[in-house]
Amino acid sequence: MAYERMSGIREKIKRAEKHIKEFEAALRVFTDSKPYAVRVDVETDPTQPIVQILKADPVPPPLLCIVGDAVHNLRSALDHLACELVRANRKGPGPQTEFPILDGPITTAKREARFAAKVEGMRQEVIDAIRDVHPYQGGNNTLWRLHRLDAIDKHNVLLAGIGNITAIGGPPPIGDQWDGNRWVSFGAPAVLKQGNQFRFLNTKVDKSTPFFAEVVFNQPNVAEGYPVILGLAQFRREVVLVIGRLSWGLR
Image: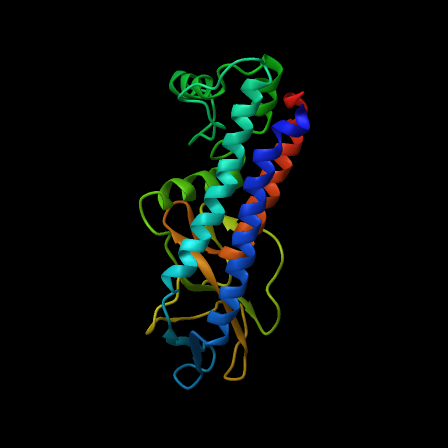
Protein backbone atom coordinates (compact mmCIF):
# COMPACT_ATOMS: atom_id res chain seq x y z
CA MET A 1 0.00 0.00 0.00
CA ALA A 2 2.83 2.43 0.85
CA TYR A 3 4.36 1.81 -2.59
CA GLU A 4 1.04 2.60 -4.27
CA ARG A 5 0.68 5.79 -2.23
CA MET A 6 4.06 6.90 -3.57
CA SER A 7 3.07 6.61 -7.24
CA GLY A 8 1.77 10.17 -7.68
CA ILE A 9 4.67 11.58 -5.67
CA ARG A 10 7.20 9.75 -7.84
CA GLU A 11 5.55 11.03 -11.00
CA LYS A 12 5.81 14.62 -9.79
CA ILE A 13 9.53 14.18 -9.13
CA LYS A 14 10.03 12.55 -12.54
CA ARG A 15 8.25 15.47 -14.17
CA ALA A 16 10.51 17.91 -12.30
CA GLU A 17 13.58 15.97 -13.41
CA LYS A 18 12.37 16.14 -17.02
CA HIS A 19 12.03 19.92 -16.75
CA ILE A 20 15.48 20.22 -15.17
CA LYS A 21 17.05 18.30 -18.07
CA GLU A 22 15.10 20.47 -20.51
CA PHE A 23 16.44 23.57 -18.76
CA GLU A 24 20.01 22.25 -18.87
CA ALA A 25 19.75 21.76 -22.64
CA ALA A 26 18.25 25.21 -23.21
CA LEU A 27 20.86 26.75 -20.90
CA ARG A 28 23.68 25.27 -22.99
CA VAL A 29 22.23 26.88 -26.10
CA PHE A 30 21.92 30.23 -24.33
CA THR A 31 25.45 29.99 -22.89
CA ASP A 32 26.89 29.09 -26.30
CA SER A 33 25.46 32.36 -27.64
CA LYS A 34 28.01 34.19 -25.44
CA PRO A 35 25.40 36.28 -23.59
CA TYR A 36 27.89 38.36 -21.59
CA ALA A 37 31.20 40.14 -22.09
CA VAL A 38 33.61 41.49 -19.47
CA ARG A 39 36.53 43.91 -19.74
CA VAL A 40 39.13 44.69 -17.09
CA ASP A 41 40.35 48.29 -16.95
CA VAL A 42 43.88 48.28 -15.55
CA GLU A 43 44.84 51.70 -16.90
CA THR A 44 42.76 53.88 -14.57
CA ASP A 45 44.21 52.40 -11.38
CA PRO A 46 46.65 49.48 -11.82
CA THR A 47 46.42 48.66 -8.10
CA GLN A 48 42.62 48.24 -8.21
CA PRO A 49 41.48 47.17 -11.70
CA ILE A 50 37.90 48.01 -12.65
CA VAL A 51 35.71 45.26 -14.04
CA GLN A 52 33.33 46.52 -16.73
CA ILE A 53 30.31 44.65 -18.07
CA LEU A 54 30.18 45.29 -21.82
CA LYS A 55 27.27 42.97 -22.52
CA ALA A 56 24.64 41.09 -20.48
CA ASP A 57 21.78 39.64 -22.51
CA PRO A 58 18.43 39.00 -20.81
CA VAL A 59 17.51 35.40 -20.08
CA PRO A 60 14.93 34.19 -22.64
CA PRO A 61 11.45 33.89 -21.06
CA PRO A 62 11.03 30.24 -22.20
CA LEU A 63 13.96 29.27 -19.95
CA LEU A 64 12.30 30.94 -16.99
CA CYS A 65 9.03 29.12 -17.67
CA ILE A 66 10.89 25.79 -17.62
CA VAL A 67 12.41 26.71 -14.26
CA GLY A 68 8.97 27.57 -12.90
CA ASP A 69 7.61 24.20 -14.04
CA ALA A 70 10.45 22.33 -12.34
CA VAL A 71 10.01 24.29 -9.11
CA HIS A 72 6.24 23.72 -9.11
CA ASN A 73 6.47 19.97 -9.60
CA LEU A 74 8.96 19.63 -6.74
CA ARG A 75 6.76 21.70 -4.43
CA SER A 76 3.71 19.76 -5.59
CA ALA A 77 5.42 16.45 -4.76
CA LEU A 78 5.53 17.56 -1.12
CA ASP A 79 1.84 18.45 -1.17
CA HIS A 80 1.01 15.06 -2.65
CA LEU A 81 3.01 13.53 0.21
CA ALA A 82 0.96 15.50 2.74
CA CYS A 83 -2.33 14.27 1.28
CA GLU A 84 -1.13 10.67 1.25
CA LEU A 85 0.01 10.95 4.87
CA VAL A 86 -3.57 11.91 5.78
CA ARG A 87 -5.03 9.04 3.75
CA ALA A 88 -2.61 6.63 5.41
CA ASN A 89 -4.34 7.57 8.66
CA ARG A 90 -7.69 6.56 7.06
CA LYS A 91 -8.88 10.12 6.79
CA GLY A 92 -9.51 12.45 3.89
CA PRO A 93 -7.39 15.51 3.01
CA GLY A 94 -9.11 18.82 3.72
CA PRO A 95 -9.10 22.08 1.74
CA GLN A 96 -6.01 23.29 3.64
CA THR A 97 -4.02 20.06 3.51
CA GLU A 98 -0.52 20.65 2.18
CA PHE A 99 3.05 20.19 3.24
CA PRO A 100 3.59 23.07 5.69
CA ILE A 101 6.36 25.53 4.87
CA LEU A 102 6.16 28.74 6.87
CA ASP A 103 7.90 32.11 6.92
CA GLY A 104 9.40 31.62 10.38
CA PRO A 105 9.73 29.21 13.32
CA ILE A 106 6.53 27.61 14.57
CA THR A 107 6.70 29.52 17.84
CA THR A 108 3.71 31.86 17.59
CA ALA A 109 0.02 31.09 17.96
CA LYS A 110 -0.65 32.23 14.39
CA ARG A 111 2.01 29.99 12.84
CA GLU A 112 0.99 27.11 15.09
CA ALA A 113 -2.59 27.41 13.84
CA ARG A 114 -1.46 27.54 10.19
CA PHE A 115 0.79 24.53 10.69
CA ALA A 116 -2.00 22.56 12.42
CA ALA A 117 -4.49 23.28 9.62
CA LYS A 118 -2.08 21.98 6.96
CA VAL A 119 -1.31 18.69 8.77
CA GLU A 120 -4.77 18.00 10.17
CA GLY A 121 -5.66 14.31 9.86
CA MET A 122 -2.10 12.99 10.02
CA ARG A 123 -0.89 10.73 12.83
CA GLN A 124 0.74 12.61 15.67
CA GLU A 125 4.09 10.89 15.19
CA VAL A 126 4.05 11.98 11.52
CA ILE A 127 3.27 15.56 12.54
CA ASP A 128 6.18 15.45 14.99
CA ALA A 129 8.47 14.15 12.25
CA ILE A 130 7.45 17.02 9.96
CA ARG A 131 8.27 19.49 12.73
CA ASP A 132 11.73 17.91 12.94
CA VAL A 133 12.31 18.85 9.28
CA HIS A 134 12.11 22.53 10.40
CA PRO A 135 10.04 23.55 7.35
CA TYR A 136 10.35 27.30 7.67
CA GLN A 137 12.60 30.25 6.91
CA GLY A 138 15.52 30.15 9.29
CA GLY A 139 15.18 26.38 9.61
CA ASN A 140 15.22 24.51 6.32
CA ASN A 141 15.90 27.45 4.01
CA THR A 142 16.09 25.23 0.93
CA LEU A 143 12.46 24.16 1.39
CA TRP A 144 11.44 27.73 2.17
CA ARG A 145 13.05 29.09 -1.01
CA LEU A 146 11.40 26.35 -3.06
CA HIS A 147 8.04 27.27 -1.53
CA ARG A 148 8.46 31.01 -2.11
CA LEU A 149 9.68 30.63 -5.69
CA ASP A 150 6.70 28.41 -6.45
CA ALA A 151 4.31 30.97 -4.99
CA ILE A 152 5.92 33.76 -7.02
CA ASP A 153 5.79 31.75 -10.25
CA LYS A 154 2.03 31.26 -9.90
CA HIS A 155 1.51 34.96 -10.62
CA ASN A 156 4.70 36.19 -12.32
CA VAL A 157 7.51 34.75 -14.39
CA LEU A 158 10.47 34.11 -12.12
CA LEU A 159 13.16 36.77 -12.31
CA ALA A 160 16.62 35.71 -13.38
CA GLY A 161 19.56 37.10 -15.26
CA ILE A 162 23.23 36.74 -16.07
CA GLY A 163 24.85 37.44 -12.78
CA ASN A 164 27.02 36.87 -9.80
CA ILE A 165 30.38 35.99 -11.29
CA THR A 166 30.89 32.63 -9.64
CA ALA A 167 34.46 31.97 -10.70
CA ILE A 168 37.61 33.86 -11.61
CA GLY A 169 40.41 32.04 -13.38
CA GLY A 170 38.95 28.56 -12.81
CA PRO A 171 35.82 26.46 -12.27
CA PRO A 172 33.08 27.64 -9.89
CA PRO A 173 33.43 26.62 -6.24
CA ILE A 174 31.13 23.90 -4.97
CA GLY A 175 28.88 24.47 -1.96
CA ASP A 176 26.54 27.00 -0.46
CA GLN A 177 27.66 30.60 -0.05
CA TRP A 178 24.55 32.27 1.31
CA ASP A 179 24.54 35.57 3.16
CA GLY A 180 20.93 35.98 4.16
CA ASN A 181 18.98 35.56 0.93
CA ARG A 182 21.85 36.61 -1.33
CA TRP A 183 24.44 34.26 -2.73
CA VAL A 184 27.92 35.61 -2.18
CA SER A 185 30.65 35.35 -4.78
CA PHE A 186 33.36 37.96 -5.31
CA GLY A 187 31.39 41.12 -4.70
CA ALA A 188 29.79 41.34 -8.14
CA PRO A 189 26.19 42.55 -8.46
CA ALA A 190 23.54 39.87 -8.02
CA VAL A 191 22.62 40.33 -11.67
CA LEU A 192 24.97 41.85 -14.23
CA LYS A 193 23.81 44.73 -16.41
CA GLN A 194 25.52 46.33 -19.34
CA GLY A 195 27.48 49.30 -18.05
CA ASN A 196 28.10 47.90 -14.56
CA GLN A 197 31.51 48.73 -13.13
CA PHE A 198 32.95 47.29 -9.93
CA ARG A 199 36.15 46.15 -8.26
CA PHE A 200 37.03 42.78 -6.79
CA LEU A 201 38.60 43.46 -3.42
CA ASN A 202 41.35 41.07 -2.33
CA THR A 203 41.21 39.30 -5.69
CA LYS A 204 43.89 39.83 -8.32
CA VAL A 205 42.58 40.28 -11.87
CA ASP A 206 44.05 41.56 -15.13
CA LYS A 207 43.09 41.79 -18.80
CA SER A 208 43.69 38.08 -19.37
CA THR A 209 41.67 36.87 -16.37
CA PRO A 210 38.78 34.56 -17.41
CA PHE A 211 35.44 35.14 -15.70
CA PHE A 212 32.55 32.73 -15.33
CA ALA A 213 29.01 34.07 -14.85
CA GLU A 214 25.83 32.01 -14.64
CA VAL A 215 22.10 32.37 -15.04
CA VAL A 216 20.97 33.23 -11.52
CA PHE A 217 17.76 33.80 -9.62
CA ASN A 218 17.01 37.45 -9.04
CA GLN A 219 14.11 37.33 -6.56
CA PRO A 220 14.68 40.01 -3.90
CA ASN A 221 14.50 38.72 -0.33
CA VAL A 222 14.21 35.13 -1.54
CA ALA A 223 17.08 34.15 -3.83
CA GLU A 224 19.37 36.79 -5.28
CA GLY A 225 22.42 35.93 -7.35
CA TYR A 226 22.00 32.19 -6.80
CA PRO A 227 22.84 29.95 -9.79
CA VAL A 228 19.58 28.47 -11.10
CA ILE A 229 21.07 25.12 -12.10
CA LEU A 230 22.55 24.67 -8.62
CA GLY A 231 19.31 25.74 -6.97
CA LEU A 232 17.23 23.23 -8.93
CA ALA A 233 19.61 20.42 -8.00
CA GLN A 234 19.44 21.37 -4.34
CA PHE A 235 15.64 21.65 -4.39
CA ARG A 236 15.32 18.20 -5.93
CA ARG A 237 17.76 16.66 -3.49
CA GLU A 238 16.03 18.17 -0.47
CA VAL A 239 12.54 17.13 -1.62
CA VAL A 240 13.71 13.55 -2.20
CA LEU A 241 15.36 13.50 1.23
CA VAL A 242 12.25 14.80 2.99
CA ILE A 243 9.99 12.33 1.22
CA GLY A 244 12.32 9.48 2.09
CA ARG A 245 12.49 10.64 5.68
CA LEU A 246 8.69 10.62 6.00
CA SER A 247 7.82 7.66 3.78
CA TRP A 248 7.35 5.36 6.77
CA GLY A 249 4.22 7.38 7.56
CA LEU A 250 2.56 6.03 4.40
CA ARG A 251 2.36 2.50 5.82
